[in-house]
Amino acid sequence: MPTGLLNPRAGVAVNASPDRAPRDFHRRLPGYQPTPLVDAPAIAERLGIGRLWVKDESSRMGLPSFKVLGASWATFRALEGRAGQPLREWEDVAELGSLVRRLTPVRRLAAATDGNHGRAVARTARWLGLEAHIYVPVGMATARVEAIVGEGASVTTVDGSYDAAVAQSALEADDHCLVISDTSWPGYTSIPSWVIEGYSTIFDEVDADIESAGVSAPDLVVVQIGVGALAAAVVRHFRQASTVGSRILGVEPTGAAACVMASMQDGGIRFVPGPHRSIMAGLNAGTPSIVAWPDVSSGIDAFIAIEDDWAREGMRLLASMSLVSGETGAAGIAGLLAVRSGELASIAAALELTEDSSILVLSTEGATDPDAYHAAVGTDRPRSA
Image (cartoon, rainbow, N blue to C red):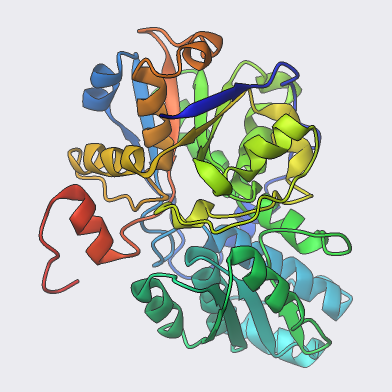
């Protein structure tokens, strides 16, 4: 059954909220447009709440995940650092790539991934005319590997977990190669911090849509937690001094991948060894990011760990609303289902959910493994997929 942990010390964000610079940057990228914020009254009724918003990240600038927001912004900031000056004089990514090649020695990007982040880094490299080398853990879905290769990247499978792939990718760093990681370690913090900043675009868009609808900010935000980068972005946006009224629920897989919950129980960052085998592959991580940890540990009200069957149920529920969400993407709604099931009574009580509550969940990816998706939702895989 799912497990939960309350955070009695939850309060405001530790780090200052980033400005609008990431969104201004993203607007200049190919295919940028805000992703939908979907009002889901049928699901809200099933959950016994007043309103449910689903931020649908199944298609973001031509990729099936939100990850390109963090990968592109972090790459841009890192390249400015290598250039020793702001990179402002460009109209499109081809011009930006020309600036990069003229002003820096960087010719390659590297990253570790369970799928979506690596593809986003590979797409960013392709935009800029750079090479990409992506490290993946053993056993990653073939469809996700093929998607990264399809971006023009080279892929190396590491005989180990995501954390092992991270360690291997870190060895690539030199004058000619930037390592663009969404997690951090001692001595490597700037780029993962910029990844978190890049995700702020999601919540700027949410604010605009909610304001347009003439409603208040959500009472609760539910966010998936892997290494914690997205969760840190949620805390920085919704737990500022002026917005501390929004509570936050973090969702992890049960078992070895629940590294944030384990760290919370220990009172500090803890490594949880694998194997990490949840179908929620984007959440299979053994160590929280050290740059995300201060916000995640101080700003999230409650943490839960759920079994894979909850993710499958979440996928099916979103599919009933014609929302395509992969295993990791559906973890947020899956966590909310678990809380409303009655199996996490103390968590539900602490979050003060009522029939009038408004809740935001993030559907962070589309069907990045089509065969697994269609098996989970109970449909045949389309021949064209």
